[in-house]
Image (cartoon, rainbow, N blue to C red; front, side, top):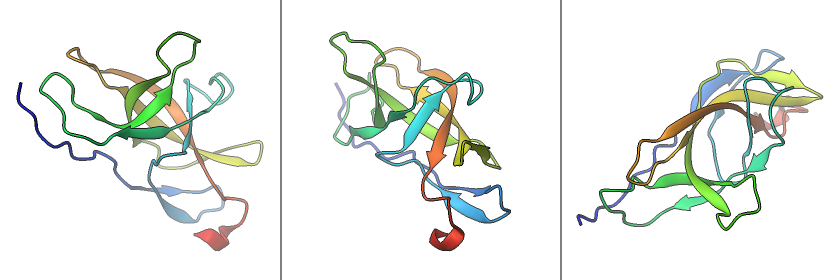
Length: 129
């Protein structure tokens, strides 16, 4: 088994808010992610947890975040990476959401991917941008 240090894959992307202001958006621990094709069809949002920040072997590529499991089984969360794919935000019930692609990292198997949305915090006033 070869052990090596993992580097983060988190990227910052510039997106346009509903009011026309552009901001940089970066997925982070405590970001709220909703999996689904649309916000109305998306499941209840889940908060990202800290990923695996340790040395890894060749069979597991590591992850930037952990996504809570949606059932009550023995697995509490799964390894994932999140990439912002949207260029503009979607406004829903006063909140700003941006499209993301969630990669569920495979352990000695290929990764699987899902579409979703990430909540952008503190968009009620442009003062924070």
